[in-house]
Length: 117
Image (cartoon, rainbow, N blue to C red; front, top):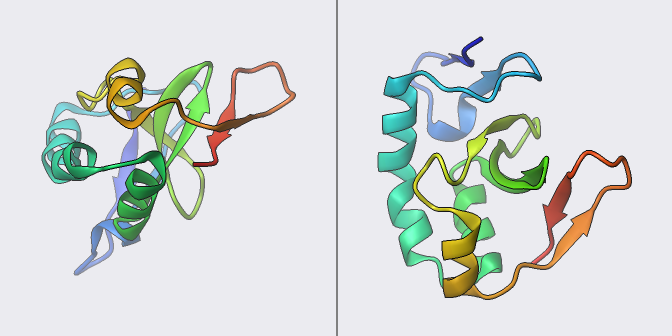
């Protein structure tokens, strides 16, 4: 099942509402390309994990972990959008450049967590 987005008239990226089934983590090709293009400078110019989080937040996004993978999330709803690897920025490459991320792991056994800094 594909993710669907609802875009209000004259929407900014922070107003887009992401929704989809919990079991789905697939975006359609067009949305993936647009996300990559919009967020590439944010990921490339980030100087630290905190800086990356601030820049993503200004665009309406967040970071988290889901099943042990670094994922892009909707800042308001917390909805998982896609993996950062899908966007061309895998955790390994980000960790080499930004250092080790400080993560608060959940205790639900699902490999979820929140990046603290």
